[in-house]
Length: 313
View (cartoon, rainbow, N blue to C red):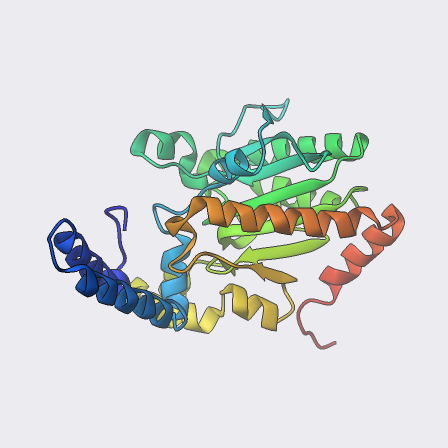
């Protein structure tokens, strides 16, 4: 379990520890095989009956692959581009050019950090306005050179600090939404882990929206929702249920188009299998989107988002 596990994973961890203890001993092969079969059965039972809060925990798992992990596995070349040409280079957003199946593609993604130093550098995956302006700069460049855009979303939300607000956080997000609606190139969105509020939506307006099986997508975190509704952040489990924020919920509500399967136990259990599934999803969806004339693509994109939600006049 890579030394890190969640509370609901403990029964699996205990079985795997028993298997490790038996390895190397003589005459216990049949017992090891029995325990392995028991562990696999337990995994399928646990991971096929996850609560919404448990999926939130998997989406935030510290060992979960981040965009740069996936990019390294799905392509041999990634030329990262930096800066918004106005203020600074925001490391919470990575952007660049790559090639998949002879197609040149612009990739834009949120990036969290593994250790303390990198978490601080990446601002825990929470972009400043210059991050969103960098993202839009790369999107405009992609449209200019007729390259499709792939975005990978994994953020608890945009950074709410004073400096970010002073530099126009809300305006940067709004500008991205406005321009993405009519950007003259295909846009494929993949929500890898957390898709939090406008911080996620700023790079998540596209022609196709896919979610990893254990990703979440919501206007607010369960803790934030619980603090507002019940003034008690410990009611996060109740909030997660009320928010209906899982990939399965999003499909049911027609917010996203499809899910991308993860290995049993979550994406952190097998980076290569996860990356393979993502690569196949990118190839399939881009092949379909590229076939559409740009005017039709833009009109369908606009209508896609206009149809979301229910309202009365």
